[in-house]
Length: 80
Image (cartoon, rainbow, N blue to C red; front, side):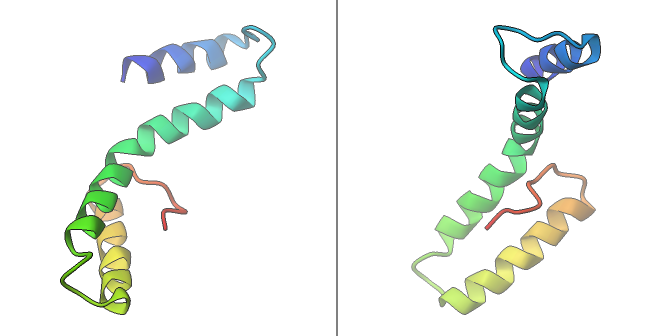
């Protein structure tokens, strides 16, 4: 959260730190925000790895991804 606030402040002020483009900071901020949901989905997938078929796990991933969105848990749109 602190990193996200700091990066948002950098983006808001329009500063270019160390020659790094602001779009890098924006992408990093989004990735950090999505990390909670991504870790949650990855953990759930691994827990079901041995017990179920890949087709069933893929269906569950879609369901879990939609559920995260519904519950406002930040998760990457392209999580696979």
